[in-house]
Length: 220
Image 1 (cartoon, rainbow, N blue to C red):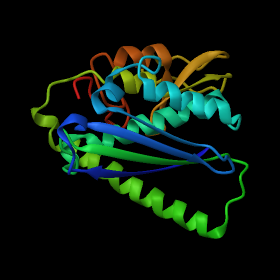
Image 2 (cartoon, helix red, strand yellow; image 1 turned 90 degrees about the vertical axis):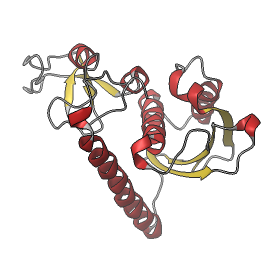
Image 3 (tube, rainbow, N blue to C red; image 1 turned 180 degrees about the horizontal axis):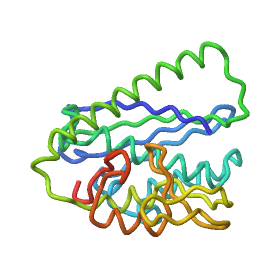
């Protein structure tokens, strides 16, 4: 699955709908489109099966019959992480009460990509790298005055997971090998850990044990 995500922040909001998030999604080669709105706090806090926008977004992806379970899980993770980055206070762009419009363009891996699309994708990746770096720098600047805080359960539950075969690689937390059938979690930075180990780790930390890439905290 290829996912391009964009956003727009609307500051001239009305009091009755302040602090909302509207999600609009298109799938290449699929006629139907998706649009749903809810309060941003509901989107951040509620589990997938309790937030209406997340439920209908999941149904939209399933009904397209273009994506498997891993693709859908990846789409949710990318969307949640993107929203967390955009609304994180240190970025300075989003203010509480603003209305957020998030647009997604999803493509199946088998879809042909024209040269122009490839260039746009490269630009999008560069822009995303700049956002990632800005978030990391902002978080690192506050490390010295911040207490250890757990990662957001919503983000942790949305991390990519897979079942591995024996590769000789080890979890750097428990130092045990990834045996056949072991459940492994992949962080946004690319490092992989045993599922149980990393869940325990994120109960008191919100950064990668290896490179210190930081996830949103539970109180954000």
